[in-house]
Each structure stands twice: as C-alpha cells, then as structure tokens.
Amino acid sequence: MGRGRFAGRYGAARLEELERQARAAARPAGPQPADGPLHVATLPARPPAGPPSQLWLAENAALMRALLAQPAPRFRLIYLDPPFNAGRRRTARLGGPDGAREVPAYKDEASFGAHLAALAERLALARDLLEPDGTLYVHLDWRSVHEAKVILDYLFGRARFLNEIVWCYYGPSPIRSAFKRKHDTILAYTRSRRYVFNADAVRVPYDPVTVRTFASSPKAGFGKVPDLARGKVPEDWWYFPVVARLHGERVGYETQKPEALLERIVRASSHQGDMVGDFCCGSGTTAVVAARLGRGFVAADSSPLAVAKTRLRLERLAARPAVEVSCWPAAPCGMIATGMGDETLGLTDAPA
Image (cartoon, rainbow, N blue to C red; front, side, top):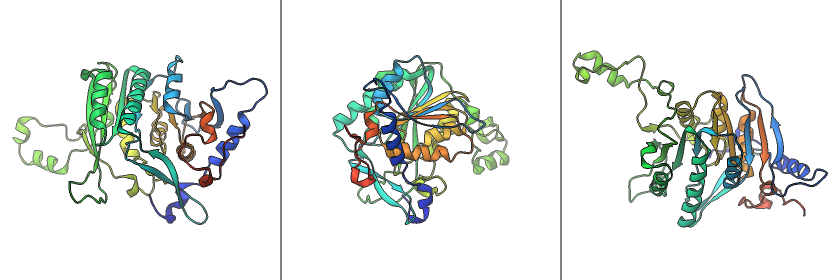
C-alpha cells in the first residue's frame, strides 16, 4: 500500500466534489426519470485523443443491462477483475498535507453461493456485450477460478476457450503449511471462432540463454531456427511485479493491477480505435492503458472511491480521449451500498 512519502500520488479525495456535483445535477427543473443516467463531469480530450470514453459510478450489472438495450457500444475486449471473495474489506489511501490515511474501499466478502451467482450473471452480460470477434478476460484467483471456468465453458462453449494465463508475482506471505500462493489466473474466451489476436504487438525478446544456444550450434532446436531478432509470442505464464513494487504507478488502491499486465492484454486483443470495457474498474488501470494505446473505453465501479482514483489517473495522462463521468442510476451517487461509512469520508446521503 505504501507509506506517507508516496501520499502525493494518492491524491486528495474528489468524492466531495463528485457528490456535490451529483446532487446539483440531480434536481434540474421538470420531471426526471427515477433511474436514468446522471452526468457529473467531462474530462476534455488531450491530443492525440482516441475515441470518446465513459467512466461510470454504477452497479455494474444494472449498467451492463442498460448498455445491452442500446445499439452501441459493443466491445472488442472486456476485462473483468471482480472481487475475489477474500473474506475481507479492501482499503485505499488518500493523500494529504499530513501524509496518507487509509480508508475503506469496498467489501470483498459474501457467501460462496452468492459470489458465484453474481459472477455468473456478470459473465453472461459481458459475453453479450462483446463484438462477434471480441474477447473476454476474467481475472480471478484460486478461490473461485475453477468454478468460473465451468461457468464460462457453459456460456461460451468449451471450444471458445482461448487461454488460461497465470500471472506470477513475488511478495511476503504468512503461509507456513503450504506453498505460497503467488499467482492469479486470467481466463480468456472468444465470442466466436473469428477473433482478434495481434501476435506481433506483444512479442518479447528471446531469453539470452536461448540466443546463445542457437548461436553455439547449427543443430540447436532440431534444425528449427526461430527468428531471434523478431522475438516470440509470450507463453501463458507472465511475470509482472505487483503494484506495491512500482512506486511510479501506485495510487493507493489495495487491489490495483500493474499497467504492463493490462497493456499486454489490450495490445493482444484489440486495435486502435476499438472499445474496451471494464465493469469492475477499481483504480482504473484498464482505462488508463486503453486511453494511452488509442482505444476508447467504458469503465465502471460501484465505489465512489474507485471512480475518484480512476479519474485522478486519467487527469494525469498527457494524452487522453474525452471522458464523460456519469452515475447510473442516480442512487450510487449518494453513497448508497458502497460499504463506506459516512463518517470516514465526511459525506452524507442526499436529503429526501
């Protein structure tokens, strides 16, 4: 999570501003729909800008159903990083003149049955939001990834399974009675047999040992010599450091993912100008990477703190698309069902 010396990266809370704008916009003259979208702000584009994008404070299943009722957008790529049901409350840090303070971010605890039911509903909605040649990446860990694989096989068909990607990382662990659990699993499924995979966009250099081996003998590789200069498509196990080791990236959000991880996914499974979806966006890594690579995005989270962190990171980008910041429906703008006590952030529900 980091200590006070990184507080400048964590940012002051924009939640008060978000709440104030939402309340003001919620009561314009004339009749208003009870559950319609509520525009909060616009982040203007900085060239070179990609397609217009959206950041939502919303319950994701409701928003996804609303998007399905519209002719657009549909997504070439959707990345879902839902709560892992770790049985705890996740935290974040907010910066200030006296250093950083830790606050609740979201609840990551539910019965296993409720967790799987919620996950299955969102996986089905994500499938239906994909373009015919789109790809869904689902990021989980040992707690429920095997059940999710069964659900995804049912929703997409087993033939549409593309990859089981293992993200490996290092870090301290209290485990002494088993091997340390130091990887997450990302399941990739395609909407159809025709899908986007940009192999040349994700190539990496061959290991120096491999290069030396082929240089030492013409018989290396049983006569099959790879294009060593071009590099190789990565294997399905990836090592990227966790954000706790990346001081230049972290914004004080406990479950923040490294940009390199999302960059490989976005480059592989989308083109410039495509739309990328992330409906559990957390601190906004997918949105930041998509914007930097010239993709449009729809990012959403039900936590105002997550939306504030995402907005903070987007505002820091040298180049970005125009981003509409909105709530849907209006209820989440009033700190309802966020798992954060009003006393923590100095916010109260909107008056009746």
